[in-house]
Length: 86
Image (cartoon, rainbow, N blue to C red):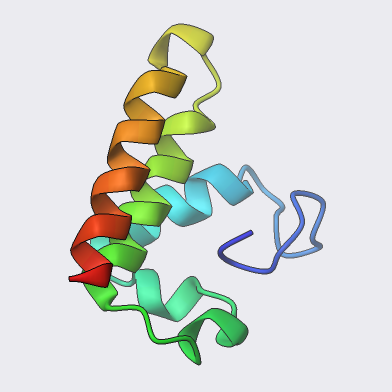
């Protein structure tokens, strides 16, 4: 949802997946470059966008035991909301 790309986008070939695309952007500090331009027009700070992508990457790990549990997700999303609103 953050990138505006579908997992079956033609750019995802030769082992590149939507998950690895976002994970690599986090590692390289280039999250803003992969985001859907519609999101960039919103009044959201870069730190919050990075946090949202990080949560998405953690929730979409291939292995279920590596995924973030829903309670942690809700807590992290709430803290992003509180930080952004203050």
